[in-house]
Image 1 (cartoon, rainbow, N blue to C red):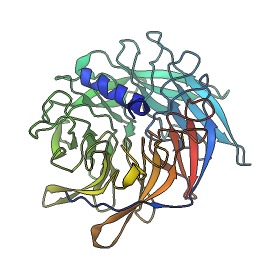
Image 2: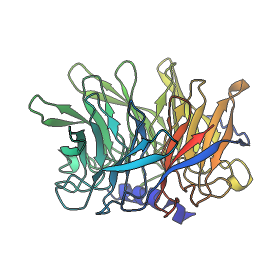
Image 3: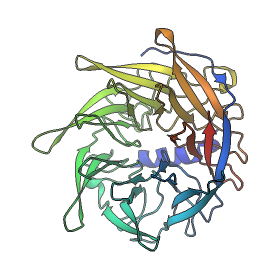
Image 4: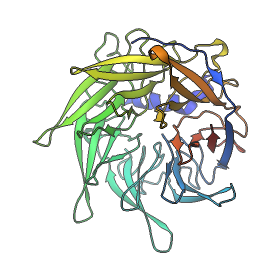
Length: 420
């Protein structure tokens, strides 16, 4: 199974260098999968991004971590033709030439209020540590890249892998998996200036006891606090070992003096509560946090909830993967989750399922606080795709969209649609 995790484990190796368990058998439904695009290599390969995004007219945008003419990854757009088919356009191809705007965009892009796309590359740029970039569409329809930040040395971060977050003032927030004052990663802010230049500020450098290697992105609550995860580290016994599989959920609170205060809400590695939370979190209307861990539980990953009461946060495992014979319910969820209007949770696992090539799953709350899982699709490793590392996105009709890192017509990955 290790070869099926090649990209996920490569990234974890790079980063290292620098409750109550509820088990329910999965239900299998008649959800329909449709491949919208198979990457051929020259137009991109191995889409690894957390999730795709839609614009206001229904076009999809995403990234591939490899491929393109120079094999440094791409930013792509998928355009529906109205007849059920989608056309692809490559908006930006990256290469490894120093100073060209970066390479290996492991995260997706976000759409700013100005209509521009914003994203990160995990590698290269002027100093070799990755960049934050902006893509702006001109009147001729062509897209122009501008590098907003070149990560310069370990103190301001190395290798941004997560999708960006934007606030109401247009400031950008993100994470780097390495660098910072102790080399364990950072949370950073980019602020636009009147002269068109952007200023980077490190809001927090991880120390190890509060976590290492934040692969996931950040989310805001209504009070302006930031929440995120680190894939390893933490203060539990054993978590301080080199690249230990524990990890944390953290909160950053802004102060009036412009400084941010970090608080660890949960450290994993306490029995079956999960380990290695690589994905971003989501927040419900009641202020509860939801996420996934790549390991832990039965050893193959979990879906968890963190609930606050009287200033304390309590973790509960909602589902532990590989709970049935053959692990047909999925193994190793890497990305985060999405809610539907009925508060059902949806996500992906990188491997596992009926053919071992990953699944799309749905979790539904039942009586007594238990949750049941339904596998919406098991990837077969062929033309339908394999290894859905990235997360999911809903359209207005309730269809789900995502990517697979492998499979497809040439083995370079796919963009797919699931009709529940």
